[in-house]
Picture (cartoon, rainbow over the protein chains, first blue to last red):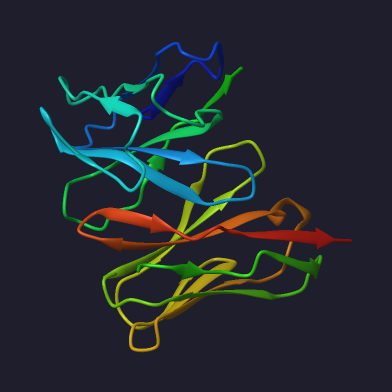
Length: 114
Length: 108
């Protein structure tokens, strides 16, 4: 079955450490996205990529970095510069850039930084 | 800005009908999506409007008025499993902006 896989489901890190969250999709989707969700709030866009080797900043990109070397993969690195990294991180994909198609989400990674 | 406003919480009774409203203050969106999110899980797609009017999908329907910056999600024959958060998202060129979500509690 096609889908989006995020790993790990839970991640714990010490303050000051960088951490990379994995996102892989086998839906053959062109566009991929990273969102952050805090308790009681909606999703906020961190980064998105509409094609391989290209990506754009979302609304809250500071302290994060991404790469898109393969169509299937869009890893997110949470750097030590991110002031408040503890959150639920959701990766999503959609069929093609510039077209309003639904987002398909992975099951999320819950990151806790202490 | 591209604010999207939804009520924070709603309560309804099993078997009833509930309408969840969503308003937005900009004309920058060219589509409106609705997603359902159960606690601790990922959102799943429910419905989508790009033209004005009503889209019906089984127990769920969504309405859009672009001139009024207004959409609603209508849930019929409510079931206990419909207790979840409902997210309204405006889209433009494939980029989605989400509201904070409406937490719906269905009571027996």
